[in-house]
Length: 236
Image (cartoon, rainbow, N blue to C red; front, side):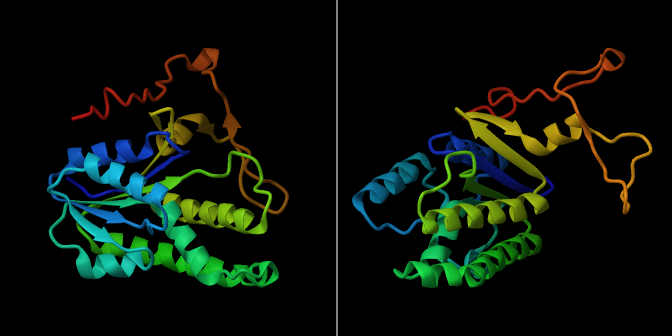
């Protein structure tokens, strides 16, 4: 099987982790699970335990809060699937490592923190390129809600958005989950974006893709992607 880089996005309790775990199970029994959680309180401990109980006991575990790409370079063996859960916690760990209690100092350090996050993603992508395994990266989509009322929350939202975009750029498949239902965004975008004839990039003209939620009368034979978590990714 040809390796892939797969990004799985979703909100809290969207089913993204369970979906990613099922993907990994379908690929191989040889799975490396990369856990980025830093257990700082009882609530996080319970969440980590729930994930542990759901995973097959045969999966190998790599625990690392930062430096995931470098850790994979020295830890990955003959695994055919590597599941990172999750990118959101990795970004949070980087942010907290570089931020201080002083709000103004933390805001001034944002460019440095952004550079650190970008390095993490670059190292992760490089680890994927050097590996023979399929990478499944789980992350949160945090940009759909209210604007966080405090600077650190807004910085985290922006940094995670940057990280998600960088991974999505390199990914072969990008899934977004709503209520446990996955939608493959790259396949959907290819089906919905139709360039206008004669449009080109230039100083005075820009590309304006035509987007339509329904096929036109002259295009009734268009085959829209049917994405089903039951038919495409059955639970074991």
